[in-house]
Amino acid sequence: MFGTRPLVYSLLSAAFFPLTAAAETPAVAELPAPTVGDVWKFRKIDLWNNSELESYQRELVEIQPDHLVYRGKSAPNAKPKTFYHGRSLATCRRMRDSEEEHCAGALAFPLHVGDKNSYTKRPWTKGDGYLSADCEVKGIESVTVPAGTFDAFRVDCDGTWQRVFDITPTTGDKGRFEESLWYSPTVGHYVKFTYIGYRPSGGVYTKEQTELIEFVPK
Image 1 (cartoon, rainbow, N blue to C red):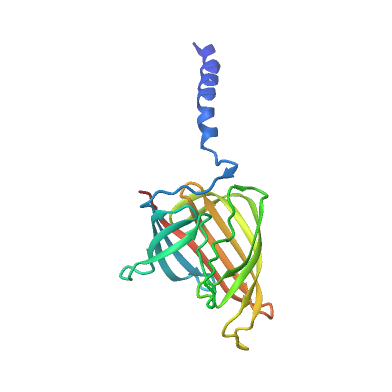
Image 2: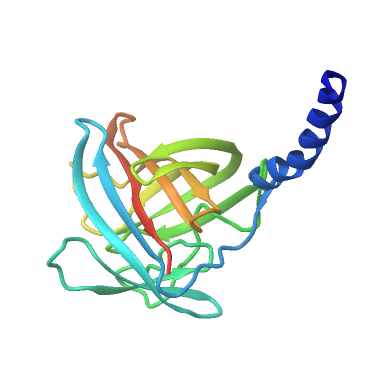
């Protein structure tokens, strides 16, 4: 009876090994394929003092050939707004004096470790200036956020910012920044995003982090 144990254990190991391998994070992250009705909830933190700057949510309401359309709000009682993103998840933006839409960002699917991507003149949220950066998929990491622990593709970017409107001696007109983004195929979105901005003189002026609080699939 005791002599049968190694054989039984070997059979069990062989049976369960494929399940373990199948659960591993794929070596490639394909273009996100979310479902209309999926909801992502985030919070943004000031890393200087670990205080919450804002919380917001995005609900996917429509999938277009070149856009993902979300309805979202930044506070429980706020009026919902519509947001357009490119299929690579970057928010679509315009400069203040232009109708040209820019929807490119740090992610360029499919993602493989070692892939490189760049974007140029990505407008700021209010269109006062723009960002340009070179990015690279650095690896697959386990990252923990309020929504849980996820295996995510880490993308690091080094770039420059350029202010175009409302330039003052205080704001300056250009500087550099660093950003890192962790994309999880499990939720079809990034689960963590950090941004460090540097003044024209070289000193840090902002350190922010955005985290996924909850993912509610349809």
